Length: 222
Image 1: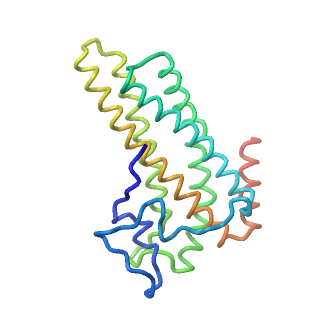
Image 2: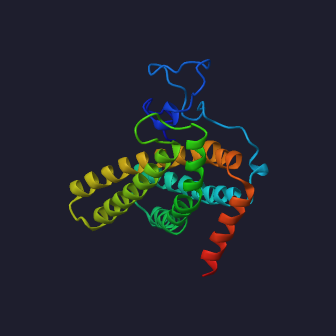
Image 3: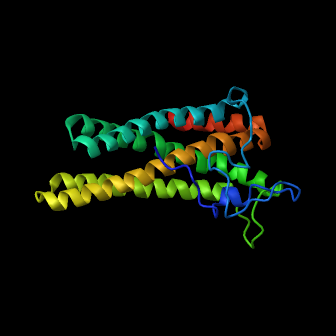
């Protein structure tokens, strides 16, 4: 399972505490990434249907990600088999057909509206150009796509190498990248489900969220 410790410089954590009376976060003793100060406790069932749609995508991605993690562990134990290849192919199919369109949906529809609200509420950095938690999310999207491409190419290269030493070296690199990728994806989905989507539910008017949902349905229909 992926390591759940988070770099204390992370933007979500850095900007999480706004109240000067709140407990001060020490860089020497940062909180667990899966228990962030910015977490908002909202029953997912109470969220707007558009946000539920995004969370439903996450459920599919998490299931595929768990299967991908099992495939990586299986490679370490037994090498590459037909079953492993099937699992890898299924994961990359899910990534391409669900994760990438999902990211575009967030970046084109949800994030711009939520960023405006976060800046209005003062939930941003104090630099010349205000930065919000959404900058971290968009950076995660880019990293995930880049890393998935690297992993896919490494596995493809390893399958074509005849020299065993070279093949093993490339496979080791692929699995190292895969472990980092799994950690990134798990934490990214957790943050969106427990911080970003609850913030959207809290700050964005339901009428606006409904309009986003209708626009997405129109895009699919076309």
